[in-house]
Amino acid sequence: MNYLWAFLVGGGLCLIGQLLIDLTKLSPARILVAYVVAGVALGGMGLYTPLVEFAGAGATVPLTGFGYLLADGVQKAVAERGLLGIFTGGFTAAAAGIAAVVMFALIVATLFKRGDKMT
Amino acid sequence: MGAYLGKGTIELNNAPSILSYASAVGPKEGQGPLANYFDYIGEESTLGESDSWEKAEVILQKSAFRAALEKGKLAETDISFIFAGDLLNQCTCSSYGIRDFDIPFIGLFGACSTMAEGLGLASVFVESGVAQNAAAMTSSHFCSAERQFRLPLNYGGQRTPTSQWTATAAGCAVVAPRKDPPYIKAVTFGKVTDMGVKDVNNMGGAMAGAAWETIGAHLANTKQSIYDFDMILTGDLGMVGSGLLIDLFKRDRIDIANIHADCGMMLFKNKEQDTHAGASGCGCSASVLCSVILKRITEGKLKNVLFVATGALMSPTMIQQGESIPAVAHAVHIGG
Amino acid sequence: MKITNNEYNKMLKAASPKTELHKTLPKAFIFGGLICVIGEAFLHLYMNYGASKETAAMLTSITLIGLAAILTGFKVYDKLAKHAGAGTIVPITGFANAVVAPALEFKTEGFILGVGAKMFVIAGPVIVYGIAASVLYGLIYYIMGTVVA
Image (cartoon, rainbow over the protein chains, first blue to last red):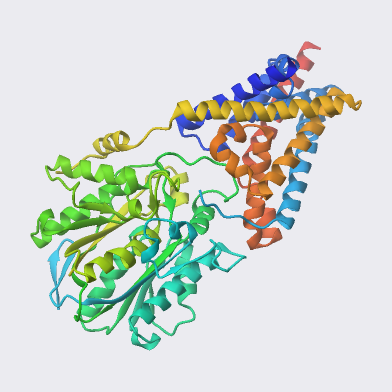
């Protein structure tokens, strides 16, 4: 069942993204920003946690999940460190993802050849 | 001497000749319907320049230029002036393409209208007697254009149904005093026309208005009708722009559907090669003109062609500032 | 006959083909869903090896980012994305592709000003506004906490 809900919820979040692209002509960068900010907001209001418990990766893999991670990180950091946590929480929670993407990008840029496009 | 007929139109009474022409294209264009007409087809998009798309585009220009010299049995020193331009910032592929040649260079920017702009200027220079032979050349490369105007090539974006595929192609024509056909009979330089279109994925739609304006001006100034031509050849309006142009003339109660052709619709097998609304880019109209079209005029199969290359003068900076896309079209009457 | 921009844009709209939603939407749903299922599989795998839920989620993100980076390097990701649309943009793999693609593309301009400076040319705003939103939320959360206390 876990897999089915992951598929349906994750697919549904992507479907909303496709609707935004096709109907509003929003560029991908704007959609990504909207998803992350929406994730922070939903996470902050406590609305995203039930979805994560219910759909697992279906809720954490889409970029709203990245926003949720940021909100969750800030909550924990504020609880632990007070005022300073406002500033450390987001980046601490996102640290693994950002460091990974930077390293992988450097490795790929070093090892791979640039590609063209024919279609 | 040429006569100014008003509002951008110059009639060339001596009608200089196109002495020689050539085209060079990339592999996707080489798989298209015009493959047999091109002088040079690159095996890969890199054209042997593995490290840069801009350098690959430079190779295209050099190849087209060398082929044009060879076909016309011309030496570098026979060319008095060369008018050239491309899509990239600082018209960079043109200046690097011409760097190795010992020829006075006049750089142009007219986006995809550059071929008609350059051909028109070269013809006026020859007509006036100041130039013996003058060349017009332009190029575009899908990859160099994508990375400057849009997104990195390996980014996973989706192209919209109205988007056009920038041609990896170059074309070069050498104009000389009147001898054999094709002849350049008249030129109309168009004005900048902005119809308020903001969709950067619908260039043909942004440019159709400019083509309509320039064709109208050319006909009015030369006192000709659309039926004096056997082909109205627009540059790269593609599927959407071509349809819109036909509609615009329909509104004027003129039916151009049967004599209108568009280079952007000729370069690729649009459906099979998945280009969406057709081809675009300076090299699109340049390579189609400097291959099949000029050949057909030389053979007498086409008598009077109004070549109208259209350019979307799009700046990513201005688009981000909320501006719309200005466009321009220049018309050159080429006859047999 | 003169034409107003308004009338022109109406004619343009009529002449422009529409996006075929009946094709794009199902593809986005299926591709996006499948990526999440792959994520779910890794989540279970890491949890089976004894990782906590939180650690497993983090490892899953790193794994998906790595896979997307490699697929971008092999020029596969953009070919999938041509069909998948938002299905490959919205998941974390799309974020990875948005970082890796410019890094690879701008390699010609060198590793500092090309790769380094252009890496976040698409995904940068995600980090900027994600972090800004988290700080804003942190502030609200802190104030609410102190007021309640």
